[in-house]
Length: 398
Image (cartoon, rainbow, N blue to C red; front, side, top):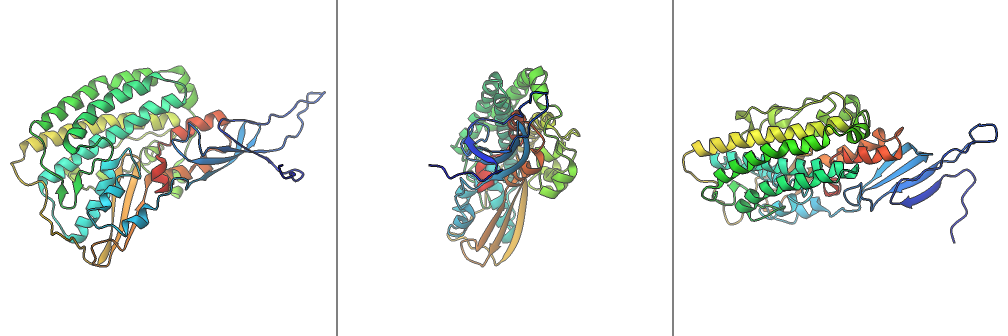
C-alpha cells in the first residue's frame, strides 16, 4: 500500500517520459486550480546520456523548478588516485570522460611533470597537441550526431560515426585503443610514431573536412531542428560565471575564454588558436559552436602534422627511474578539454603515490546550471536543453 498523501502535497511520479497535469476548464471557461506534480526524469532515461536524475516540479507541462541529482555512477576516482603510483593513475584519469580519454590523461602527466621540473621532448609536445585535437574532434562528432537524434533526427548520427571511424583508425593505429588510449606517459608518450602515420593522419583529416558539410546541411537548415533549438534554453553570461560553466556552452553565450589561447600549454602558444563564440546562448548557438570547433581543430591538427614533419629525429619520451617519486609540494594543472575546463590539483608528500588528487571536471559545473536554466520551459524543451549541455555522466560523478 502507498502512504496517504497530505492535503495539498504535490504528487510524485517516477517515469521515463514527460507528463503533466493540465488545468481543467470550468463550466464558464475559467481555469480550475491544479496541483504541482513532481516528475523524475531518470535515472534511466534516453535523454540523460546515462544514470542522471532530474527532479522536476511541474505546473501542467511547464517546469517550475529543477534539481539535478548526481552520484549514481560515482566510482571514487579521486580516492583511487591515492593508492596508485604515478604510472598507474593514468588508467583512472582517462575514464571519467570516456569520450575525451587522451585529453584526460594530459592533465595528470602535465601536473606530475611540473612537480618534477621535467622538460618533455619537443616531438612529444607536438604529438600530444595533435592527438589532443583529434580527440577533441572525436568527442564533438559524438554530440553532433547524438543531439539531433534526441530531437527525432535519425540520419545525422550515421554521418557522424562515419567521420569518427575515419579518425579512430589513426588513433587506434598509434595507441592500440579505441576509447582508452593510454598513450601518455610522464615525460612524453608511450612509443615512437609508426612509419607513415602522419601521412595517414593528413588523409583522414582531409576526408573528415571534406565530408563535414554533409552533417551541417542535414541539421543546420532543418526547420524542425531550428524550431526546437532557437530561443530555447538561453543561458546568460552572469549565470555562467556564477556556476563556473566552461567550454563550448560558455562560449555559445559570448564568454570568450579558451585555455589553449589564454594560458597556452603543450604547443598551443605557437599555434593560431581561433576561439569560436556566439552571443545567442541558446541550444542552437551551442550546436553551432561545437560544429565550428570541429573545423578549427582539424586546422590545428594539420598545423601539428606539418610541424612534426619538419622536426629532426629525436626522442619522444624521457627515461624514468624504476620507482617514480614526486617531490613534496602541490600544483594545479588545467587544460581545455572538449567539454570545458578540466583541472587536476595534485598534492605530494614525496612518495610514489599522490597524497591527494582533486579532479575538477567540466561536466559537473555544466550540469549544475540546469537548476537555473530549466524553470519556465516546457517538458519537451527540457529534452532539447539537456542534450545541448554536452555532458558525460562519468565526468559528473567522477
